[in-house]
Structures are given as structure tokens and as C-alpha cells.
Image (tube, rainbow, N blue to C red; front, side, top):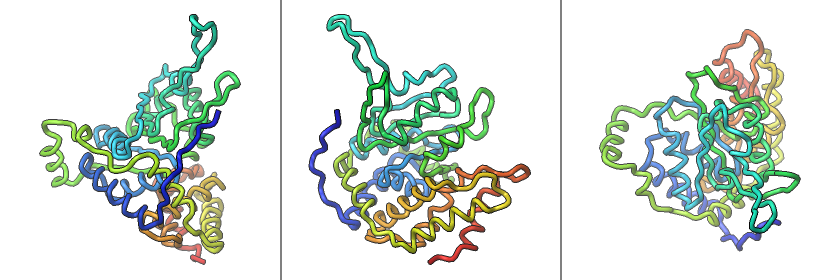
Length: 320
């Protein structure tokens, strides 16, 4: 049975910009992260996309997800991935109710609004595949019954780039479902010193107050979707993705889904900046975050070639 959605407030792009400013300020209280990383997380939120964070332990990945959920007064769940994690542990399962003599569905953690999938590459391929339907279709199917997920619904998945023993690299089909990939990195010394001062005696995330609610976020998503993207901009996005497919360093270039998500992300960035139309500048600003992790390199290419492929495509493809 589909959920009934309450009437949402109407937000124009300037209102989305003001909302994004409040969220940035709130997140900055809990985590010291680069501006582009916070921007990409908000784009994922407003464009109904998912975010992949590949970074070292202890740089604030979990704190970022928790702070985001508290900032929008949303339900938060964490899935700690291990080799013995089962798909039912993620999506839920049917449990027999002896009192009523029937099976009842017990939802899993993916039924939250903000779901942190911690160290996703430590889960088995079978469990990783259980997330595919959730991320793309925003529902799960258990024993031929479909269960709608909460809205908004956002997955923030993490993986450690330095430990590969006992891991299962995320397949291309799953990587392609993440709108953006980002790296938090280590903070600057002054920022790290400030973090010690503010976090030295308590977890600041617990002190955060909500600056929005899920209804406002849904309205912001609708406003971002309504941002105008011209036919010329669509052709530009398609040409960029096409250029990655023709590059000799790439075995598998950006997919049509990548083009769609880049287009949506560009519209969300325009809304974050208070504009009612997206520009080629928005596409160029997000091309690396949206496209880089989707490229399957040809034999002999190096990881640095991913960034070079995107940079060359931006240089060679004229903005229409």
C-alpha cells in the first residue's frame, strides 16, 4: 500500500539556497569537512541521489551521516557491513506471528531516511546486491510483496581505500547507482585543533538541533527537479559522457544513467545557488564527482587516468 504524502510547502530556488545555508552551518558544527564535500552531500540529498565516501578511518564519515540526519530531523540507521551480513539483515524479513497465526514483515534498517552503509565493500556480493533494488527503485521485495521505503531516502556508503584483505570490491552495477563519490580527507591543522577544542569532552552531533524537517527536504527536492535545464545543456551532458566512452584509456565509459544523474545534480546545484536554471558551469563543477567513479579503466591505465579522462572531456567538448 502506498503511503499518503502530506501537502508539501512550495519552495523556490532562493528558499532552497537559504535552506542549504542553514544545513551547511549546522553540519560545520559537527564535522570539519571541505566545502566541496558538504556541497556534494547536499546535492545528493536534494537531487534524490546516493553518496559514496571513500576515505581513511576516523575522518568523520559516520559523523557526517549522523549530523545530516539530525539536521533534517530524519530517521537514521547504520549498517555495519561484515562478511556474514545477510540481505535479510539489510532489507528485513517475514517473521511468523504465532498469536495471529500469520507472517509479518519486520523492516530492516534501509527503511530509515538516511542510511549509512559502513565499509560496504566488506559485505558479500549477495548482500551488496540486496541494496541495488533499494537504491534504484526505492522499495524492497520480500516473498513477492513490495514494501515502499521512506522518503526522503538516501544511502551514504563508505569504503576504506587502504584495506583490501577480506573485502569484495563494489561491482560496476552498484557503483553506477551512486550519484556522487567524495573524499573528506584530513582537516587542516587549525581545523583539527578546533575539532579537539569542541569535541574534546563530548560528541557535538548530539547537540545539533534540526534546522529543517523531512517535508521541507521533499519540497526542496521538488524545487531542484523543477529547475530548468535547456536542450543545449542536455546535449552538453550527453556529449561529455560520450567523450568518456571514446577515450582510449577507458574500457567502460559513463553510462546513460550517469548522464541522467549528472543532469539532475547540475539542476540541484543551481537550486543550491538560488537559480531557476542550470548552466554548463554547474555540469563542469560536478563532472568529476559524478562521473569519475563510474569509469572502468582499460588495461595499463592508472587510477590517476580517471581524473585525466574527465578533465580532457571537459576541455575538448564545447559548452553549447
